[in-house]
Amino acid sequence: MKYILLMTGTKVGVESYLAWSQKDRDAHMTVLERIAKELTSSGEFVTTQGLAGPEEANVVRGEKGGMPVTDGVFPESKEFLLGYWIVDVATRERAYAIAGRISAAPGPGGMPTNMPIEVRGFATYPGPGSDRR
Amino acid sequence: MKFILMMTAKKADWDEYTKWSKGDLERNVAFMRAFSKELKDSGVFVATEGLAWPGEAKMVHAGKNGEPITDGVFPESKEFLAGYWIIDVESPEQAYKIAARVSAAPGSGGKSGSVPVEVRPVLGSHADLGL
Image (tube, rainbow over all chains, first blue to last red; front, side, top):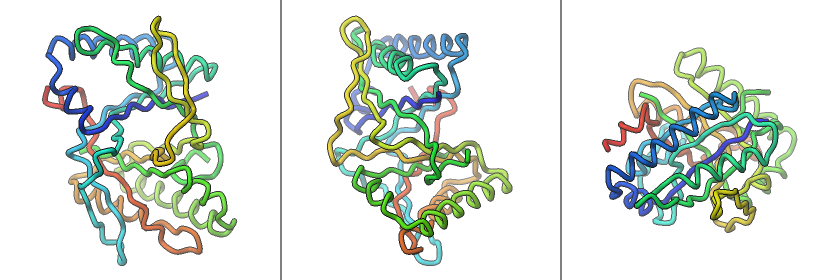
């Protein structure tokens, strides 16, 4: 079963991450890279992707005639997707365990970030977005 | 340049979606299929996924010993990711144009939903953050 692990954060959260020391960031990335490597070895890794910063985000709407209307203003509370992992695991619990490990990755001073990771399956019904029907 | 196009919706929006008529659903799905095919035919398609319903979402964080602690309670205002497309295009403007097309997908009553689509570059590597 495939699950997606979503890491989100507000602009304030991203700003505080950018203020981490280089050493803290390196320690954090080393753990995330190790997790990806382990998932690859165990055959559970599907894909991972990091997104650009919130300041590069735009919301687009289609106006009459299909013209794109862009807007880059977001409420302070907006949760931006920072990145995701897709894993193919035997059980839902295994997906939670992997999300727990990502959440436990070290933050400032080597303390776990404890970031919440949203875990969800994929659409198996004919809904918007999926082309796997 | 790779961009991600994200569609998000609150639980109330998902509840609304379940009330669409069969004809409206079919028109929407037909559009989405044609849209994906067009992206593939024009060579800009990288990936797309549709996510399961918010009812299946869990928040996980690590407990003291690293064990996962799950929570399935979310605020009403929470925007859930409904699905995404990753495209590889020449410019942000091209990405916005494509996003506008999917924003104008037929909704309830066959009318354009004009749903907001968030567009953002994806990172080739962590170094792209400029750290």
